[in-house]
Length: 319
Ligand SMILES: Cc1cc2nc3c(=O)[nH]c(=O)nc-3n(C[C@H](O)[C@H](O)[C@H](O)COP(=O)(O)OP(=O)(O)OC[C@H]3O[C@@H](n4cnc5c(N)ncnc54)[C@H](O)[C@@H]3O)c2cc1C
Image (cartoon, rainbow, N blue to C red):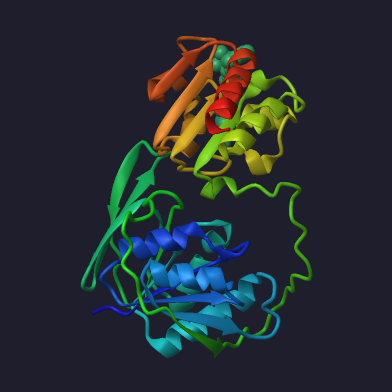
């Protein structure tokens, strides 16, 4: 049977949810998980709950903050010395940067950002959206092992009944090699909200928001239902929201359970970033807005009336 490693990132007091999604999909295999740096106790517990047999914490000097070279060198060394055949990670900002580097160091094949996959014995085949989500490609990896795969967060979903693994925790020392650039400090953005790419519920605003101040009504709805706020490019270009909030072809690709588009027309470049959302709700004054062709639920109306009314109803419902 193939030897499989899942690379995880930590977040707050746990690990990123996409790792648990991958573990759920790999159920039945003997899976090792690794992180660079400490994993919070709650995270190790969760990894075991979702099937990790062994949880490795990789430690080396200068790896406190993400370093593309340091992390890549460390991971390459760990993968080589343990002879993994397949290495999985979330297609997060870090995963997108790190995995192609490591695959390149091995001169090995890589499949990026799959939204689903089958893994039986030693055979991997995945599904990957192409051309802004207009079609799906079936992808496999060829050539010498290890093979690398990144998975889009929220695409697989968490298993209803995860099968647990032993979750044996072990430290491993790794060599970060020569790091030509050292990250001294990471200054986080003001928002403490869940990152857009991992959010389960997103409320997005478009040009119709008119100004940054008006995003407060989206913040209030988001706060009430536990959502993260996103924006269209028109809203970002107009200075209503920072680029980190942009959803779409030149922004973030998201796949939440619920996406509420407020005053967004539904241009193809916006749809490219959110069309794989499970349920799409659109609020727009124009009944012919293209977003309605993709929406599961559409509300033809003024967002400045509809959004506060929704917030009020949700507050009453959720207490
Ligand atoms: C190369 C390229 C890359 C791009 N990348 C992206 C990207 O990553 N993300 C992205 O979003 N766009 C992207 N765009 C831009 C994209 O083409 C659209 O211009 C943009 O998505 C439009 O944003 P919008 O829907 O907010 O604005 P608009 O198209 O102006 O739509 C505003 C909508 O609000 C509705 N409205 C107005 N008032 C109200 C109200 N009071 N209540 C409710 N509804 C109201 C209107 O009916 C309209 O449908 C890209 C374009 C190019 C060329």
